[in-house]
Length: 214
Image (cartoon, rainbow, N blue to C red; front, side, top):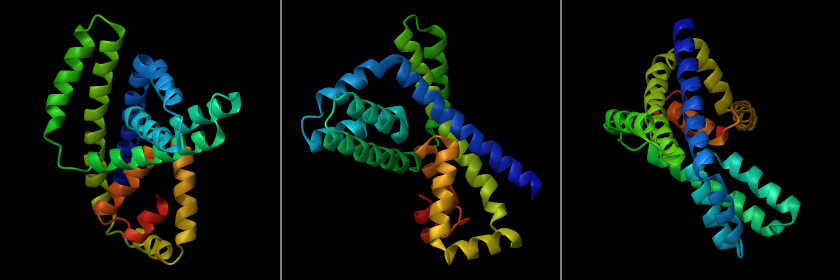
């Protein structure tokens, strides 16, 4: 059990680092452009939401987009309703990314690693290097999700965990609170969603509990 728990923790740690790797690449290469795009497309709620979705998909973090939107609102660069639409769009973008990453795309891992490393090592411009970083991060996200599924599957048969899972099925409010706490600790809503979705995919958590966690 301790070995499996350690393997699961390592897989989640790799997921966190991979998501951060992608976000760092986007921030270093495209953050000024993203901020300008979000500000220029905040004329109405629909365009602001679409802008937030695109930014969240690129940055792999609805939280980062929400912080940018809050900063714009505080400084008066965005109206409060536009900032709210931006944040809601960011949540939608994170949900779309989560759906895409759980498609059968594992065969892309070797190509993404080779392509990403080749770009990063051979690129001459700063932006090109960051694109390589993002591709490497994408491959590592897929690897980490596979590791989470592999580590989580045996844990589901443990009697102690089964009792915990049964308790949360009867107390979805506590599951919701635990999910919020984990997302805060991870500093990445997308990483938390991907982790909970991987748990649900392996049967580690029931669908209602996974929904409450998310």
